[in-house]
Amino acid sequence: MSVLTIPGPLPDAARPDVGAALFSTWSLGTPERQRAAVEAIAATWDSRPWPAPELLSYTVYAGTDGDTLMHHSQWADEAAYHVFFRTRRQERNDAIDSAVPDIKRLGLSSYQRYRSFSAPAAQVDGADPGLFVVAETDFDDADPRLRRNWVDLVVEALEREPDPGLLSADFHLIVDGERHLSTDRARVLSYARWTGAEAYEAAMAAEGPRAGSSAWGRVRAFPGLVGSASRRYHFRRSFVPASKSAPEFTNSPAGTAE
Image (cartoon, rainbow, N blue to C red; front, side, top):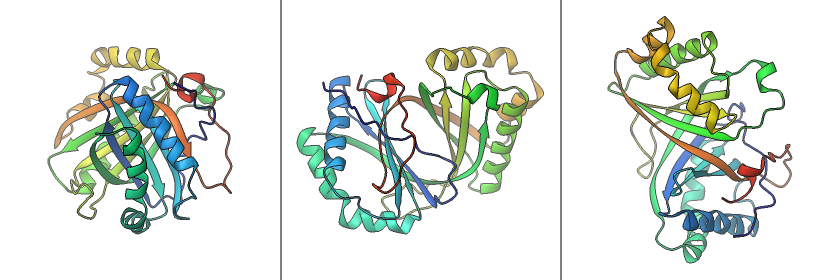
């Protein structure tokens, strides 16, 4: 497979002009099809005009499971996405499907960022994220105050007991959408950047010993918390309007196809 030589800039999950952050997942079945889909997406998007001024960025990540792709698009507002969905999305998907048939599209949800955590500057400076971990946490009550309070506790715990390999974490609250979007309003999505898999696995191994700490104990015992599931990803490609420029992420594991 060819190398993706222009990976593009990483998105700024905390940029203030994002009115809707959309996340979706595709299942490809094999690492070979996963790589082929990334190349088909790149060929499709590189060969077409930018579809809408309200689309601020579009980023593709490959799951370490060798199966999934995650799509993260930032829009000025969700209404602009619905226009794109009706007028331009299908033609692009058809082009990708012609190259990689039988893609399973597992769902699309719209979120708005609530809070972010950033590691101390000394830890972040010069460090490229080698791993992205996206976790979806569910609650049994649709009241958004419940989810905001839980995120506040998580950020407090991270500030008190930061993980050495965690660079940042952005917490998003799901919002209601039109019929082709998820309408589950009791979910938090966290988008975390880690230095690499080794650091993430070390942090997960330390969860047990620190579970009794007051900050993390309150997070785990939070009323209404149902459970959480996460996936690990490597960055593959991002797309931004031609007039926009940003430093490119050049870490080779994320900038090339596996």
